[in-house]
Structures are given as structure tokens and as C-alpha cells.
Length: 171
Image 1: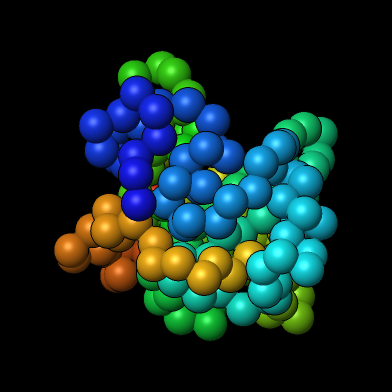
Image 2 (image 1 turned 120 degrees about the vertical axis):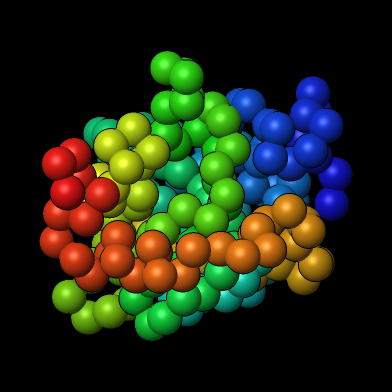
């Protein structure tokens, strides 16, 4: 895979989530993130089970007016995966930066990945917001090599998801 324009490496990218997800996953869909789910119909396989390299599509909400897309970098367990994505947390006071192996926790009552919480670098913990998810789009190409680190912090991902208040200031 090729890094998005103006980035020497996938992880040097600064910009919107859509071009990042397209480069990281090989899934060639364009337009606002919230439109990817419908655009994938008939072009790519879709489902509700996370798989490495799949793009997770966040629904359009008042907090996410354009939606959000991210790429699954690792599956940790039935309710925890790691994402690599761009334009989520602030780094050095600005949004847009790529983040590798970020915790995504399924908080849906049925365990179907319809509602999730996402790690925020801003607070060093899972955010308080719950986000609706449309599902996962499965590509037919090999995802980018830089999608995951050599030694991602599985233990940290599980603690982030399962220990209330983990990563919150003062803990």
C-alpha cells in the first residue's frame, strides 16, 4: 500500500480518516466516511465480525457529522480489537494524526459491534462516548504493513476495555 499524499509513511499521515483508511486497507471507496457502508454494498463483502484489515464504518451522528472510518489492526478477543486510524485524538493540540493499535471496545448489549467506545489519546483512556457502528467492510487486498506494530499492547487493550476508569487521570 502507498502512504496517503504528503506522508513518507502511513503513520506520518496527517489529515482526514477517509484517505487514510483507503490507503491502509486497499478498499477503494470515496466520499464522506458515513457513506462507505452503503457504497460498499455489491462491491465489497460486509459484515459484523471484525477481521484484520477490515474497515469499520462509524455512523453519522451529531458528534461525528461525517462519520468515521478506521482499519482493524488486530483482533484481541470477541469484544476488543485494535484500530489504526487518523483524525481521532489530538496530538500536540491538533487532530488529523495517524494512530496505530488503538483500543476499540464493543459495548453493544448483544455483542454485535453496533455500539463501541474508542481510546482517546487526549484522556489516555476509553472515551465516555458510545458510537454507533454500521459494520465492517472486508477488502480483497493485503492491508498496509504498518497497520500494526510488531508488539502491540494486548494487555493494555484489555485493561482499557474491561477495567472501569482505566487510563483516567489519577488512576
